[in-house]
Length: 370
Image 1 (cartoon, rainbow, N blue to C red):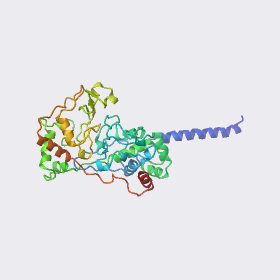
Image 2: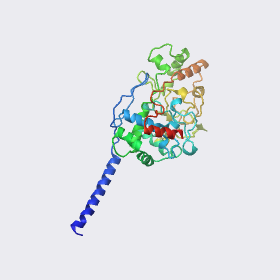
Image 3: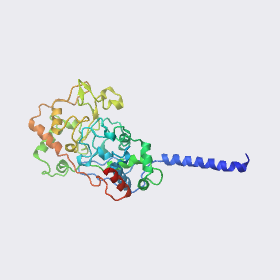
Image 4: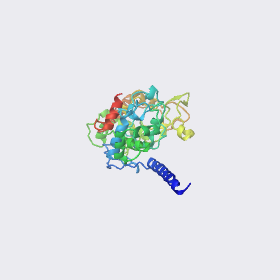
């Protein structure tokens, strides 16, 4: 073949190489926010929010994440959103023992609250996700939750002109990747901070009338080593009032014949000592998030206190910190419940379903109504 005939072939080959290179580089480019940086406002009682260096919050990513959080577009059949199982009215948790996913399928553990999840060093009851960003993948791919694929979500979002426009504002022009979806939703979730509770107004705000005398006595039961010693796991000090140690403990929940029915943290670490261990949940907003424990086996806060008073269910891996508290009087137990009820914070502004102001939000709201 002479050079003239070869020229079109070479040009075509060069174009193909260029297109492939461009596709790969756009597809794999870092999804670093390009919008207006914003400081996350922290309510009374909570420490500063930890933020990863590669995902600084911006006005645009938070707004986009809010829309995505409430949009069932992430699920295979447009029926399930993040908010379907993490509802604002109940501390961004689920009042059902097990959440309902695509096709009416049930999950296997009670949905943990999204509120204040920004302070968790790992996500899910077993800690299998190392960050809020990574956590987003789990429900999308879980066959009993959203039952979708990451590539499927990308394809659907890239086919939506309104989402193309909003992602461009947040991350710059180009192809939408799931990495961007993760970063946007995580940025929104870092603004879901519920504090400024009656306890906070009393303890940090020095308002003696903010909580009852019973709740004040209950706080002493909670933190005293010779009483409830609850702070051994539900960490509380002047600089850390998240009420969780971010560790994993076997407290005897979900145990039958001294064998855990759910292996918990062990499924992640394969460490024998982790059998039946689950992450310590925060106690903030606990009065809103019933039922309790990973298996939703306890219906009320009184049930929870009574469970600990009994020392939990015996099993070889039960944490040595779990001991019978049967010496607590009936009044002390009631006071402890009153203290826990005083930890209910305020739902922050701009975290509910987005207003109907953009084409993306209009589409999201129409899918929610369906």
